[in-house]
Amino acid sequence: MVAIAMIGAMTPATASPDNPPELLSFSIVHVVDDYWLLYGEVNDELPEYCIVFFGGVLEGYGTCADADGTFSYCIEIPPSVVGYVSAQAFDIRDQLSDELYDHVYQ
Image (tube, rainbow, N blue to C red; front, side, top):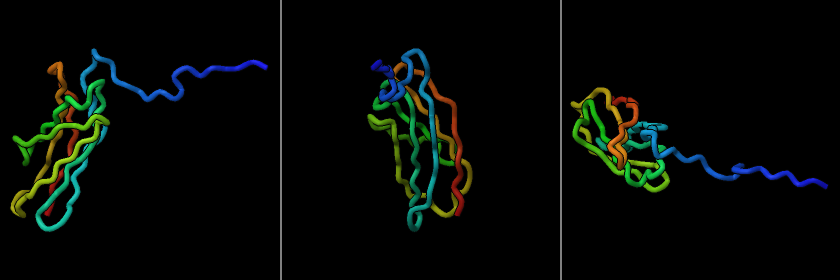
């Protein structure tokens, strides 16, 4: 009987240290009243050192990713604020991800 080894079959994919972080997902959902949840996932070899910056109608806000690459941020947004929000990850080597977009509507 011949045993076949599947090298790396059970190993999760990790990002290369030479590559910028990759923003895998970004979404905004209405929670309750004027509260909204911004959440998503970033892929990087050290995701816990990534900061996700928001732009558009939420310019100036940001949050840190967890060790598993997920991030979330809950914010109160007045009903008068409507428009697009961008998200972009920034890693420990000063590299930026591409931007992803979603929108706030009330």
